Image 1 (tube, rainbow, N blue to C red):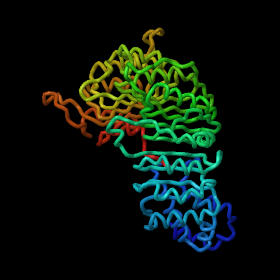
Image 2: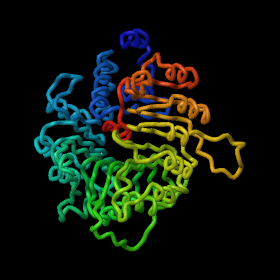
Image 3: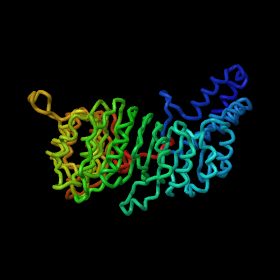
Amino acid sequence: MLSEIQNKVVSPVYTIPEDVLVEIFNWVIYGLTADNEPKRTSIGHDVRAIYRQLYELIGVCSSWRDTIIHRGSFWSIVPVFDECGCSRQLLSTVMERSLFRSDGARISFAIDSSLDPATFLRPLLNYGSRIRAFNIKTPYRPLDTVSQLIASSSPGTLSELAIYFTDDWDLRRGIKRPIELPFQQQERFNQILGFLCSLRLRNFYIDLHDVSFARLVELKVEEVILGSPQMVRRLFRAISSASNLQYLGLNFISSYSSSDVDTVEEDSFTISLSNLRIVHLSVAWFNDFEMVFKSFVPRNEKWIIFLQDRCLFGAQPPPTPEQLVPLLQGFNIDTLILEGRYNSDWLDGSELSQLLRAVPSIKTLKLNSWSINQQHWEALTRAPSWIGADTITLPLLRDLYMYDARISDENGIRAVVSSHNIQKLHLAGFLFDEDHDRKMRPIADDDDIVVWLASNISDFRLIRHNLSSYKSITAEWHLW
């Protein structure tokens, strides 16, 4: 393809203004979509794709090579990988070359390495004043070196910070303690954090106490045990200061669920963010769930909520599904993800119906690892609008996802699809075979229900491999 481009434009290339050529290169290199947003996959894939495009464009002609080599912004993303697949060169060579060619431009470090960060981060301290973004994915707890590197920047210079600690040793032990920074660096860190536009933390937590966010647009905290409820309140207080926040993700976070933990509330406060657009929420225990919805003032932001049976634990006496209903009311919940259990489902039909009726804004329902019986199908079936004006009907679902589902009563799923006029359905799981003592078997393409669904739903997919709702929440670690 590049050779064809070269043949078409090599003669008139000198007549194209350089700023126009640079804009074209940006589209090619960064894979921008029609809305000028990059397509997101994973940090490793994204950076390698960027550098692959860079080297392919360099090879087209000397004019393009000169434009790209001498434009520092094209080299502003500095890869720190074990090896660079696009050029097959050593980490140190690629990193040094990118730093040299960036030529004073503000730089973004993209780190996805199994090496100890101390081996390659210390030499980068001299670049602190130029660091625009810092994204690290590492199996090492990078506190000391990372904190030094971040502290070497200036408030307002670093705009994006993303840290993903991949080692699951703490996960296996059920421990994810918040990490506090050295006291002597805390004040400077608070200043630097306060000017961030994007902050993403996974399996790694920085205490945000006394941080006031002036510019923050995106905040994601994932897979973190915050400890005491007071630590959760500290996080919420920091969130409440982010008046520009648009995207918030609190995924698989929790505090202590033990009933003997001191849960006496501090002075009450509320979170009211007029610019907030989307909230992804998955918390472990009922006390965390309650704290979220009692702290936030509902506006027009869209909520995507993940619930599992643990949300009925964490308080004494043990909460009931009915206690979830008043917490959800009034919020614009667009997507509800319900995680089931292999041996039993924690919501029966009436409880499921009551939960859905409390949130009429739901457009998408995702059921993962549920045994869906006749009672569940009846609870999900929407009554015709002419049956009593005073009847509180189910929300009108548009999209339905069922992963790792164990389905009985095929007529039930037909009734649900017809009553909601489902537009999109993704299905993976098993059917109870009535002809073989109700043994479960994988759903197949030629099953009557699959043929019917494919004929009646515009976007129907039978998925071969069972997917986890968990993976749909904590997606691949992105470059940005």
